[in-house]
Length: 502
Image 1 (cartoon, one colour):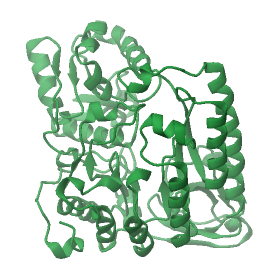
Image 2: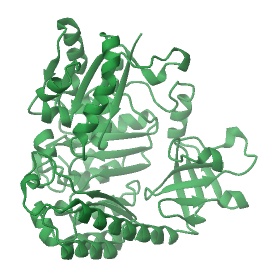
Image 3: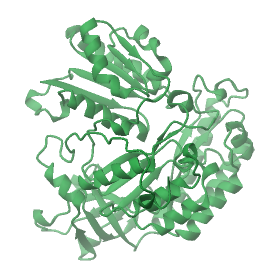
Image 4: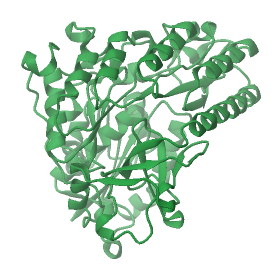
């Protein structure tokens, strides 16, 4: 029995790719090392794969540090194979093998399907195999997959990006945007539902520009509406849109489609128009706030999250104050905040007026304090409301000591909820089931719903997702389904299936 260990760094795209890598390895006869019973589990798997990110600060240091930790194991067991894929591999190529000559395989973002063959070739030739393609040959969704969840799944609608943000290296590593045909997307979504999935997340570097490649600028809104026609699909999410391409037809589709969730991740990056221009973000703060107002006009309870970069080159005190003012007006439910760091290969890396680290840190702390205050106030405003929670197995780190369970509300807020005392095991909600509870406290970063503890609201609805999770409960990794084959490309769909989306 040969084992594998896929280690993921970075965004949802990487998580989705890692599910495909796991599926490929299991199809080739490998077994997830985490599924091996503890007494027989090896300290290091036979194949260790790093699916890397080049966007995060110190991504290269993290990779080479991890590779260095594996070197003694490689010296002890020359048959151990180490593979590096993802954005760092696409960017650094031969550099990885030069800096870590004990690596066996390097593959890029466009050829994850080559991994099993590259491992075999490296084993046979007893040398490192490096294969980096410059363009995508096949969508990741056409490959076998080993999903992490029985009741939720990712569906890729596009890869690559046509934007030229000066801080971002993704377009040069993942290439220009390539869109899947809507029929292929909907076929994959239906197949996932047949397997028990009740929630899907549509993935793309810029989902709301979907369709430009095949000439339909309203294709994403049509795709959302078409997802609403899939029986058994309870929740649809998407990430990430771009404010410059976000149009009213998408808001209309979100509001009109019952299973599209009232949550939106809308990256701001900066509230200063001067900084946005330097970032090559083709919108301004006024347009950004207008989008949020339009969303809330049609979806009043929508929870909106964002990304913000602090300390971009040339950012002045006045620029940062403008960011704080936009944050005050936007009332984000939460924000992913980042201190700008130089990413080699991006235009911003060579810009003048790099902001001193001490200044960036001070601004970062002020932004965090402001957003925490807003997040807490927004969560307190939800107290007393009834929410439907999709139960998840690993969301609550303190569930065991608090006797609670956890999951996500429809607006994607994290909810920790109490279970009635003495509830028989057969009546307890399972991961993938839906629970209706009342929010009793809004904490800064989550909601607490202890209504059941005082005899209040607690309603459990069994779902196909819960059934799917229960069917895997005896697996070494509970909740993880078996490997499924990837979706074949079926070309353009019948027009009726996508409400005119070609």
